[in-house]
Image 1 (cartoon, rainbow, N blue to C red):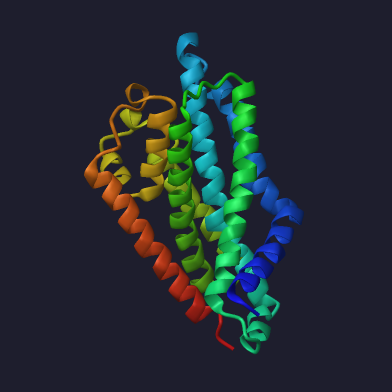
Image 2: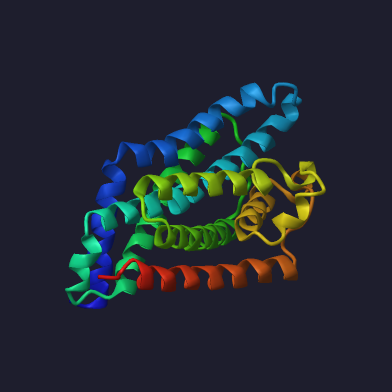
Length: 258
């Protein structure tokens, strides 16, 4: 079986699981949609009407990032732990299947599932009055930034799945990591963050990617700073490459033991 065939087989199997599992759909897609609808009515009642379109636009971006993190850092490790409980890896270890190819199929699932969920969130956000101003070039750059967020989050998800054996524990630890990252630097614009949290944003590729997308789609003035500087871009790309490589290595070593 060729490498491409192995990746495709792993992707098709994982995609069927993600689309059929109501818990995955609920935690990854329905919760961000719920927050997208409810948060403006609960937290932002006093915001002047002229600022609401930009605020809703920022909230759409934050919910897309939350969706990606939930998929990659909670549902991915939960799915891997479930397969380990069912001795899938013992069976695969006796077959001519490359662990890296099998893992890449799972990562492709995260990409596609996140893209589907993100499209739903964005369309709903626009219907609710979100303002996102982007050009064609901006859209390509945003897609690249979203891919970086996916890879970094997937790296964390692979590490969780490799270390935590139980399906429930892997999923719940992933949720905890998602929430910590969300409230560190994604839930609110950079200018509104406490000074204590701002340095953490500059070393977290998911926060950086979210802010870069917000700067393109909502504007630097709303965000409060320009994230497109040499240091932030370098930290984001290098950290993502390192962490994803570590996650892939640990996954192929720990999960594929007979």
